[in-house]
Every structure is written in structure tokens, then in C-alpha cells.
Image 1 (tube, chains in turn cyan, brown):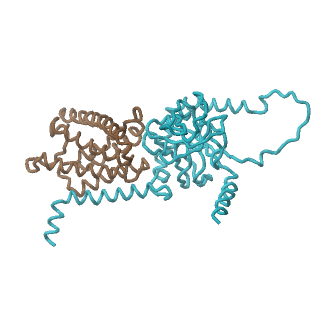
Image 2 (cartoon, chains in turn orange, green; image 1 turned 90 degrees about the vertical axis):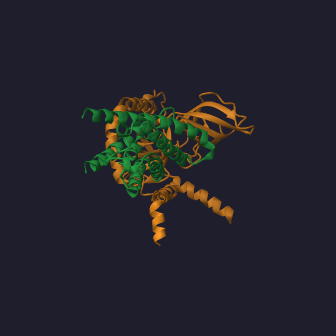
Image 3 (cartoon, rainbow over the protein chains, first blue to last red; image 1 turned 120 degrees about the horizontal axis):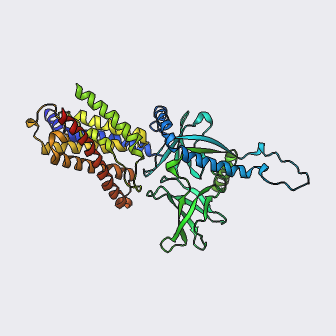
Length: 279
Length: 171
């Protein structure tokens, strides 16, 4: 027993290494599990609050860029107003009540923390379960798609951004029927790759890449980025298309969370399909 | 006693700088400085091993909590503490040291401190970035990130140390 004690105290550094290393590896592996909502993340109340305070200062630095993008968005929204079109029709029309048939609702949220340079990046926003945010909702910024809600706490939510290993947003080239998942290779935060597009497609440079609308998360036609170049992957029949993201993650300050009012209906129907096949 | 206060202050300042400033600095998507390891580097020689490991682990965990990467920095910091123990046991005779010394530039000289900082920084960054990516296929990118980040971190460590150095000389 004494010998054992002597042995342990002689090599105590090694045993301490083993102990602390195993604790951290366990934490690391456990926390990586996508399904398990962990208490240790920035949706955590205290750290979220600290970040919000620091962000209040930081916000001033980006004020002009944010103003520009909001002004641009205002202009484009104003262009869609009914009052900005010249009305030359004299026939009376039946008015369709669209207010009660909204499929997508948008909620504005402020970014309080974000990472861009890691292999897997997250963004924390100051809206949470209290404001009706749920896991799996889509998130867009003023310039395009940002990510998908991952974890939600009472007042904060963290978003798994496009710049994440596991994010797959189904997207298509505008004007074509083909669609495929977007993946990020982890190197350049301005570039993503669109895969699974058949190679008979004649691609133009700068063609718009938009959401396909085939999922339940994003509406159809939201801008993601522009085609930079495309290449055939190893003689296969699919293209690998490099896409330059339209969202500048460095300057991102405000985002919109999308709530799909018909999500449940579509999901129930689709899972019923699967269930009936299994029978 | 003052040593404890200095270390606590250093802990808080380094965490703040790391989390609110350096986390956002990045060049070509390749390197981020991790200056916070300076805290582990500068702990006094007579720190017992259990305390050293505990402090290194806590430092890593604090950074992790802000970065959403629980366990990642903690693991790298624990390895860093282990390498520190080995490096010091090989290069320094404990009984020749005066009391209350810290392994810094002004007490140990440039050559020793340079190798000390170099080896510890490289080990820490190597484990940190590889654990983060956790893919063999991305090893070349990761290694270049390790080297570039280490250069960046070392430069910052020396800038910080030279600031302290001149202060001590003036007194």
C-alpha cells in the first residue's frame, strides 16, 4: 500500500494529466452530441448576459455597415409596396384576405455573440423560448440565409450557422429545377460548396443560389450566394459548385427568425408517408 | 499573498482579452492567437502540481464556456500543464532557485524563456486545433493553422513579457 502511494506521488503529474484529460474529453464528447441540449453553452443565462453587455459596445463599431444594409432592405421592401406601382386598371377586384393565411412569420433578433473562425460555428441571439423560438427554425439575415436554430433557453437561442460541419441547407440555382445540399469545407468563411447538381446544367458565373423551398425550414427563393466557379468532382456525374455567400458573417448584427405556420402539417403528412411504407 | 492577487488579476484580464478581442481576430481563416495560455506559463515555480493542473483546467474551461466548446480548451490546457511540468523538471534545478520565482523573461533570460514558450505553445496549439477538427483528412490545413497561430501567440507573449520586463527594471 505504501509502495503504491509512493508510486502515485512520484508520478503525480502523470496521474493528474490522466484525470483532468479524461474529464475534459468526456465533456467534449458529451457536448458534441447534437441531440443533447447542454447547459454549458452561450444560451446559458449568465454568459449570454455578459455577451449582450459587451455586444452593446461593439455594436457601435458596425453601425454604418448595419445602417447601409437595413436601408437597402428598406428600399427593396418599399419597391414591393402596392403604393409604389402605378395603377392603370379600372376593373374592380375581389379582395383576398391574405392576413389570416400567412405561412411564414419573421421575427427580428439581435446577434449577441458569434463565432466565425472555428470549424463549427454558432451564433447566439437575444430571443428565446419566451418569444416563441423553437429548435429547428430557419434564420436569415438582411443579405441572405444565416443558419438554423439549435439550442433554445428562456431568453437566448444559439444558431448553428451555415459555417458548420453538419449544416445541410437544400438549395438550388435560381431558374433551374435542380437542387442539392450546401456544405462548408471549413476553410473560408465566405465560401460554401453546393453539391449534387447534375453536370448537364450550363452554369453562368454569378448565377444566384437560393433556397429550394423543399424543406419545412426556409421559404422558397431566399438568397444564399452567387456561383463563383464549378467543377466536376472526380469524373462523377455531379457538379461541385463553389458559392460565394452573400451574408457577411463578420458584420452580421441583426437576423430574422422564420416561423413556418404549416410546418407541423407538412411534417405530419410526410411522416405518415414513411409510416405507411414501413407497413 | 500579492502573488495570488496578481495571478487572479492576470486570469481575469487574459480571459477578457481572449474572449472579447482575440477570438474575433483572424487572418485568412487560418490563425487566431491564444494568448490566454500565458496564465499557465507564468504560474510560479513552487506551484504544487495538483494546483497547477486545477488552474490550467479551470482556465481552459472558462474560455470554453465563452466559446461553446466545452472540454476543448480544457483538454489542451491540461496537456499544456503536463508539458510544463516535464519541461521545468528537465531544465531547471529546483534547489538552485530562490523563493517566489515565476518562469518569466526577466528572471530566466531570453534563451530559456524562448524555448519554454515555443515548446509549450506548439504543444497546446497542436492538441487544441487537432481536437477541434478531429479529422485526419484535414491534417495539412490544421498543421499550417498550428504553426501560424503559434507564431502569432508567441509574438504576443513576448510583447506582453517585454512590457513587464521594462517595468521591473525601472523599479
